[in-house]
Length: 353
Length: 282
Image 1 (cartoon, chains in turn cyan, blue):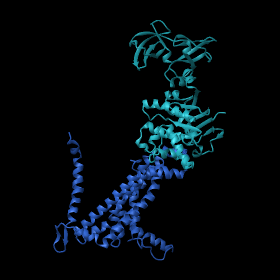
Image 2 (cartoon, one colour; image 1 turned 45 degrees about the horizontal axis):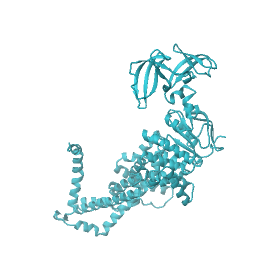
Image 3 (cartoon, helix red, strand yellow; image 1 turned 180 degrees about the horizontal axis):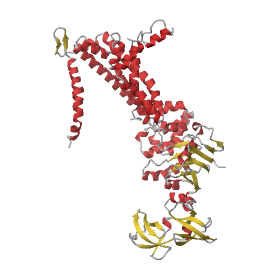
Image 4 (cartoon, one colour; image 1 turned 120 degrees about the horizontal axis):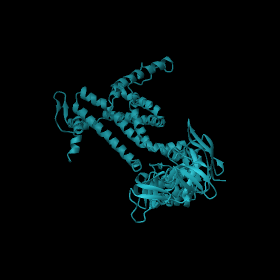
């Protein structure tokens, strides 16, 4: 049985349902992200697991016990808050020691465990500083040490990197993952940042409108999204409404805005559907060749790659092309768009234009 | 362009100079003059007035009483104001605006009117004593007018809002998640209050205490009405020297001594605060 199980977890505020019968599970030692746009219910879910909010329905089980009757202070979870919530009137050492003091850990052991936690986050030298005198990244580490020193069964991270600047955020992603592995602690992270979720997690739980959309490894969530929302929320995607006309064991045929396209093996019944193609899977060909004809509308240089906006009979396409060192096609150029049917995803009809 | 800041702050500086610095300097000079019943103020330069005040037990008693009243007022304001600020902090926004209005309500009424109200309540034939005697709870009136206790009571009423607002401001600067963090680490409600909330409210309590103490030590109207001639404080003594005895230089010397002693207490207090909470909370 899974270590942490959410079973039909629901939270209603009056008429509004913030979390709608969410069920998923986390294995011991796993790093799972709750990913979704703001207002999707991910933070409310975290609050319920932490014990700061009471579920309207459903169960939370951790290591076999039901958390419903256990107050927040006795759940023994490590929590890193978005604002870090450090005790500014205490030194780093006192911050980290607080949880152990509450557990009445003997002085000698307390000292050793605080030292160990500070070493884990590479803050041993700054133990006697006050948080105000520290940088954002250092405060983040203090918050992490404070949460980990109590050796929690479960570590909850609430948007842990959102207060850091872009460069530091990437460094901390790796660092956070290293610390989590070393501590071997089961971790649930809430984030709205898809690159963060993809880079750090063993599995990603994608949420929207209070409901679970998909749970899978980062690679699978990106490669085989189950619905329109997941395909566009994680990375960029060219989505178009289409009609699935026929399918067999070798592939499928779709009609999209008057253009007939070959697709991969479809699991849907023929009828309205949606197609999704990642920008980096599209190849440019000479005009008239490939599957579609288009005109380059916009060209953006991103360093490692070019992003092209191309107007086609289907609608606007985004195409990503690696920067090979050669000059890229100019704005206004006529091009052909080509992709292999295997790179196309067929999704249930959604709200795509 | 270096003259620009000076130019811009000119009006405020002029106001400050004319209304505060000049009178203060004149009082300071006056305190070194001497006084004669027949000749009036004589422009001498001696420490005679200071020597008279410092050498007389009568004045020591008045200073002692003034600071005792100020200290008691401050302590009681803190005891009442801190819980009040905590409640205010936890109220919903709609209730909060109503309660803030109630809290600062006393400040909207003139000190004199409010103090006369207290006189009506506290007098020997006042509302409280009459009621207690009518119910047969006491035989003779319980003396509250013309006592230090009565003055403290009325001063607390006036100054509690300053404490509440100072503490509330400090609480609002606090990260609300710190309480949740302490709870998740296993702290009980009482421990959260004592170890997390109170220390973060401390700067507010300390600055509120400074405000209340300095205002209570120099309060005039309340001690004048509720203390009368019997319970003199420094401010009423200064008033008497100026307007009854007409010994302005002596009054000026007492006023300067009050200023110096209040400033000394405030600086010492500030020093203490900085040493205690300086690094974490600035």
